[in-house]
Length: 189
Image (tube, rainbow, N blue to C red; front, side, top):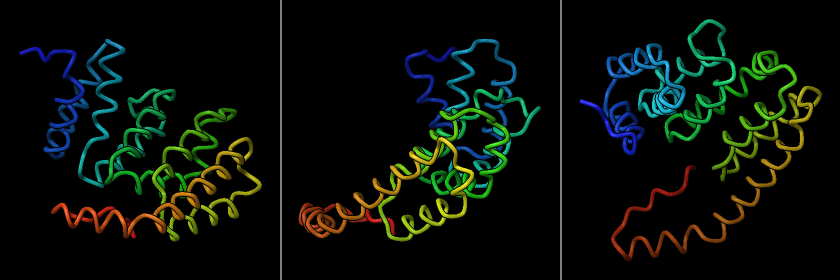
């Protein structure tokens, strides 16, 4: 049966999230077989919905390996899909930190790609540990950030603001949620 285009991304993502390697490989096969650009994009994004960290790690590696089946210009879609996944966001950040040189070489001269990776991987940072990791990343790569330097600085500033917001509001929100009968697992640290 055909899946309506209106719900295709939801169906694919849900299947990948609920499934395992078999389902992931099935959808990957559909990606390789498809000749429709919009379908390929939908599949690339949906493949990032997996709950399996090893699958997401493998997917990140594929995104930045020539000949993997993922076009070079689509690596950013894969990175963004993994980074937006709650399980994948730390994988994406660690991949960015560990593979900065590889990403730099893969995207020679591409400011938007590298800057976009930093921005999406750090978007939800709100702890002192995450701030420390960002500052260490900045120090380690200070001479190699190029035009991404400003985005790293902005990410540090945003993380500091997020920490301040959490410090000022966490207990108030936690108390309110508790009174309303909801869980309080909103803090990452």
